[in-house]
Length: 98
Image 1 (tube, rainbow, N blue to C red):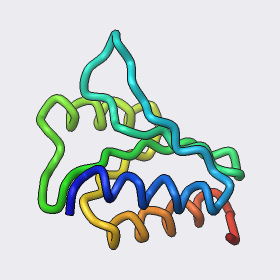
Image 2 (cartoon, helix red, strand yellow; image 1 turned 135 degrees about the vertical axis):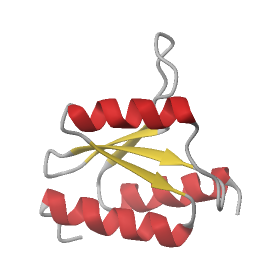
Image 3 (cartoon, one colour; image 1 turned 90 degrees about the horizontal axis):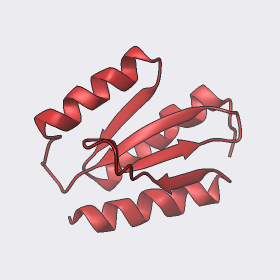
Image 4 (cartoon, one colour; image 1 turned 90 degrees about the vertical axis):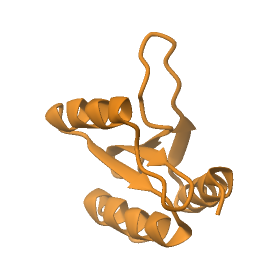
């Protein structure tokens, strides 16, 4: 499955929950995750989307570690199944019942 298909699915599911899943681009820093997710419970998470079986590049992994050190959750998703699992985890952390 293509990364773009997984990303569309993930964003659509976030919208159903009333969350924002914004495309995250920073001209001053490479390796940032693809999406920043703001939930109704005030939680902020970062999501890296990949094609099926693909993994984060070393620079991306280093940035993910940095975000973890700041206390943020970073998820790497490479399938619709992984997207659903991620959505469940974020929902629980946000106290969301949708």
